[in-house]
Amino acid sequence: MGRDGYIAVAGADELRDNEMKAFEHQGQRLLLVRAEGEYYVVDEMCTHEDYSLALGCIKGRRIKCSLHGSYFDLATGQPDEDPADEPICSYGVKVADGRVWFKPDSRR
Ligand code: FES
Image (cartoon, rainbow, N blue to C red; front, side, top):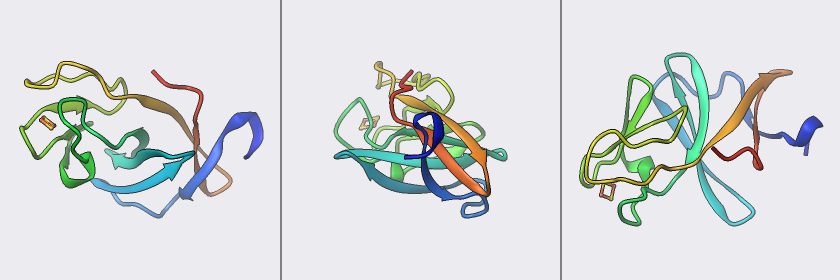
């Protein structure tokens, strides 16, 4: 655990745009995503059915579920294409000291 409740999850240069990395924190499956130069941490599983968003792709600042095609905003977690109607969680992220950090208790 780093300062202010943030946890390091990757090196700051580890991912390129439109790449993602799945990881677990306290039994929870999460995704680190880089999109348009920014890092995001979101839930790995789609809210429509139990399907991994790591199998989808990044479009702009959205992640697409490859099973039925819903998109989720990476910053807010909100779905903006049917059939998913529940948001995924998006977490606070910062880049500092050459690493990417996320804050587990900052769900939104
Ligand atoms: S499982 Fe993701 S849109 Fe259906």
